[in-house]
Length: 112
Image 1 (spheres, helix red, strand yellow):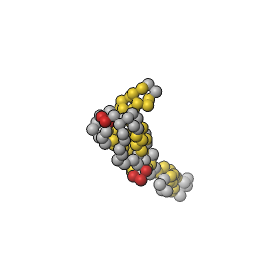
Image 2: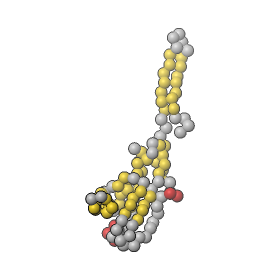
Image 3: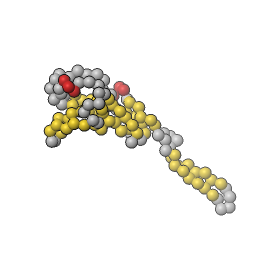
């Protein structure tokens, strides 16, 4: 990251000639495992908070999906229950869980 910035090439002629360029350094996304949720057990009807932290530059986009490809159900939405194949954000809140929602939830990060 410390190499990021403006660079200039200069030729000392009369008149002097120069060209500038900006170097952007991209750091691939990486999960911060010590700050990311692991396996958990939740009683039926309970709630779960799944957290996925990632680092990189630009800041990685995080999307949650179910490993089995089924929809993620959000019950705390203003209009009742919503279903989605993917939910964006570091935190996935699940409430009023039913046994049909158990399984593996995947945290997928990518550069925006």
